[in-house]
Image (cartoon, rainbow, N blue to C red; front, side, top):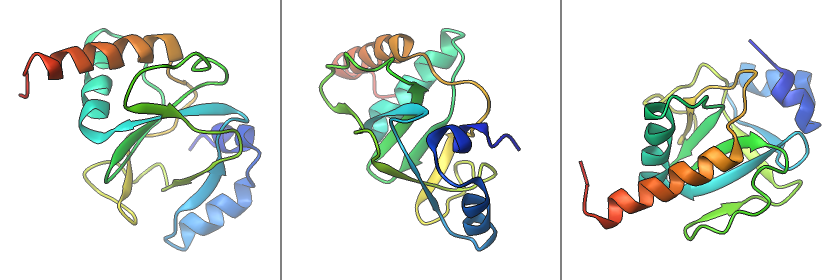
Length: 143
């Protein structure tokens, strides 16, 4: 399991692993090693699907009941201005399950759509995919 993403956040790797061993979520800060874009759940899933369909590399993606959170390269979402999505503030804590907890499985109502690895999603590509996902929703494509 790659732990570089935990280390780059400034969180304790050993503390994170210990919490996971106890069946708990760990909290890692956003905006230090990578940024997090949070979007509504339905549009977030569509955004991930759009990235995959375009053949774009997709980094870690979390899902919780009301939203999807995408880890992007630090600073790559600084100009984000899409309605319905926000970039988490630097230092804001993100509860994360172990990488093995992938949807549809959950831990405290959180799971990974795409588990952590060494790749982060490109913020500009995410922006494009989010806009495209919004357009399909507006057009009534609710498949």
